[in-house]
Image (cartoon, rainbow, N blue to C red; front, side, top):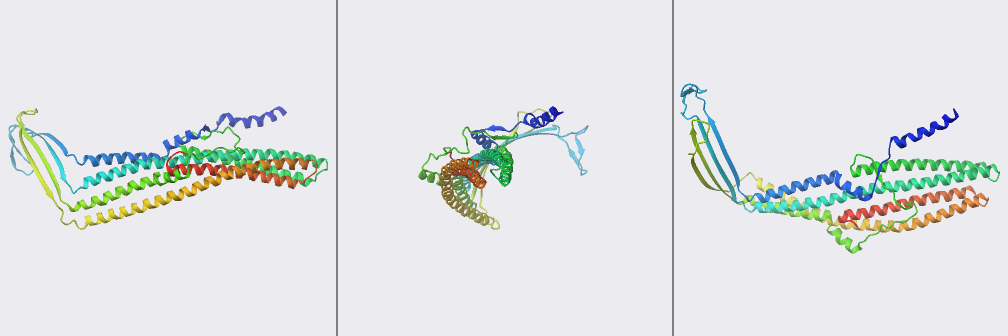
Amino acid sequence: MKILSWLLPLLLTSVPAWAEPGPRPITLQEAVRLARQNAPAVVQARGQERSSDAAMRSAYAAFLPNLTLTAGANRQFVGGSRTRIDSNGQTVTVPSEPWTYNAGYAANVLLFDGGRRFFDMRQAKARDVAAEVGIVNETYTATLNAKQQFFNVLAARESQGAAAAQLQQAEQQRRTSVALARAREATRSDSLRAEIQMRNAQLAVLDAQNSLEVANAGLTRAVGVDEPVTAAPESEDTTVVIHAIGLAVADADLAAMAEHGPLVQQSESLLKAARAANTASWADYLPALNMSYSRSGSAANKQFTVPDNLAYSGALRFSLSLPLFDRLQREEQHVAADVAAENAGASLRDARLAAREGLVRWLGAYRVAEERVRAQAATVDAAVEDLRVQQQRYAVGGSTLLDVLTSQTQLNQARRDLIQARYDQRVAKAQLEALIGKDL
């Protein structure tokens, strides 16, 4: 029974390890690739580009003529006589050749429309460029989201490591406090405080584990896959090591890139499209000239065979139309196009100002986080040494447990601050990349 009581907890705790495998580790590059492929906004942007390409082809094809081919056959059933009564009671003579055939073609081309097709073509081209830039913008937005979720996993894993170290140190301190209390070299209050400290460390471990699971779920959604994924572990000890997350571009070059970022380029293309639509609205006040040509033939036959002697006829037509009054619909369309152009101009101005603001914000956040990483790494090293000294002094009666707990609290806070600083630096760099539409 003792053997079963010892094996049962071991079996119960080992079942999830093989029954439910953990999430699949992926690298940052793979997370970015999957996000760029599966993000709904990127898929919609690619669909918008396809629609814009089709609209541009249609705008170019508007200069070509319309072509139509027609063909038909008709048979009148006569029964036993050559006359019949129709639905109105009238006597109708049926021809001796019941099959009639017709065939023809027609072409229609718009010769002049006031220049509307030309401006429609410019508008379609500008919208196509905006759609292409929109893909870049949505791609880097999805990249930013994937990187943030990836960094969330890394930060949660770092917090988990820090919580495990906190628990290990709390357990060690508890053993020391209990031993000193039994030797009557410390009070029972010290052992109770050490017990509380260990319980808090256990709660920190559980909280870090829950944060890691939530971060893994967020990363899985960001990359758009069905199977659970997690960030691949880094090779270094991320709790104390400073990673090189540098910028390979000077600040002046970053400013120039931000002035021509995806949002700015998209706003510029939309402004061109709005101006083209505004100019095209004046074409409704000019006349339109059309040319059409049609040729058709017809014949009758006794059997279901197309005769060779079709009687053809053709016609060439020119038509000129000028709407004099359309109940002010042209004026309404022109006002709407003019308002759209003004709105597009305001959006472009705001996009440029937003790019400058974003550059100042995220570049400053990156620089501040970079210095915080260096400072907090040194703080962690100092806190580790201070805790070691306080623990040794407490073991020989040179300090109180309160001094040890204070050092432990400072170390825990320093680790959390280092993790947050490294996360802020990574996110700030990803924000800069999304702003300029390039990898740094």
